Picture 1 (cartoon, helix red, strand yellow):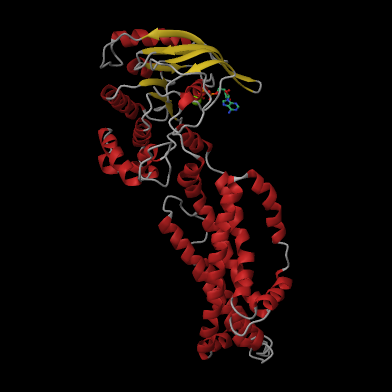
Picture 2: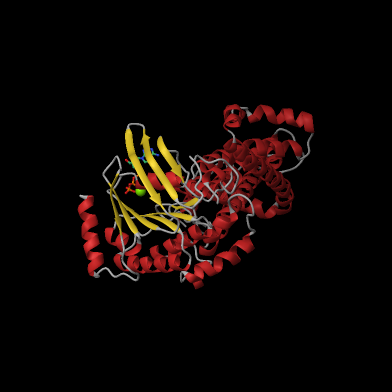
Length: 256
Length: 249
Ligand SMILES: Nc1ncnc2c1ncn2[C@@H]1O[C@H](COP(=O)(O)OP(=O)(O)OP(=O)(O)O)[C@@H](O)[C@H]1O
Ligand SMILES: [Mg+2]
């Protein structure tokens, strides 16, 4: 089991420990930036393979939470125990000078041991892009891709990083309604084909109900867990299913 | 396009002034005299041009190599930056007019002192924009690289270096402009050939038009290098559009 204390590149990362069962555990986590308290006493346990949606008002510390899990920040209080987790940052962060394929393959070219040559990385990345419907776009640069396509490339890159935990920070926040529905469908397919533990930050409660096994609702800043709702609905889910509508209502009430 | 019109207008006014005012051609030759000299003295101009072009070419190549290496070194280490950056600024206050004759006494009339002067003048405009662009990488891209577990070197190789390339081109274009002046200055300090040497010789010989022709050749060469760099940037960095209001061929 790889953990953040033993990152694949061998460098020590800020972490409080490892987990043997692949689960993700946060206990009493607090994080402040100067006078701004972003998170307070957040405790959360996510078993391996679970998809957890994190919803909360703007600025309540959702991105901070993901960065703590990925080891990009240290908690000021409490402990974070996590297997290796990779962040899909808010905004796609594709490199403008690389084509779609090379952007996805970047995850295989950097990092610690066993980094691949450009050619080997491309060969590994190609089928992943194809599975996301980007067959003919290997050489196309981000500026020429649509918003939906850019998110697919960024997700392919995140998958190819090979971490057991994916932290997706508002992956579809910038997409229009139709593209977003489409994006939710391919994300669902991809996770079914290759299950991972997922923390999915979203502004959209409906998206949370459609995709997640569980919804964690954070309070306004400082972010605390105010509700933890299981989503016991079979896939595929539709926005109009009565179960989805009811749960969406319930989550929205906890957000107010 | 507009620049060409402006140039034509200037040349026209100049021609009118020299002809109508019957200015002595030793004092100020008319553009037509300069053009005549460009043709009549073409062999002389060409042989001296190749000398100056070589000095500039080698000098620019040296300053590019040194400039990039120095920018990366300064970027990678805070200590180096603290220690070397002030010296770098100080190096630009060295009066080239003083150093040039010194270098000639040290290295002789050959190409070495010219290359040294061109490099001294040109590496600064390469280091400064490149260094600042290396440090100005989007924090989101840094975050991405660190979540992918990239090493310091991989960050440089995959993100910082490519995103600094447009700034490197800006620096190179600036260098081309000052490099021509530096080469001429170095030649006037002591040389047996080159456009600067030719200019210096032509004026006491009352061949003022020839001196102007040498200047014209040098300007055209700098302009050609500048346009070449712009075209190269367009080809090599298609993802970084030149600023639309910027100079384009
Ligand atoms: N590096 C930082 N320095 C200072 N303050 C920060 C930093 N990162 C986050 N903050 C502050 O912490 C709070 C939480 O930020 P965070 O980005 O985690 O919120 P968020 O829930 O992701 O917001 P959004 O929905 O807008 O993405 C905000 O008030 C933010 O201004
Ligand atoms: Mg955020």
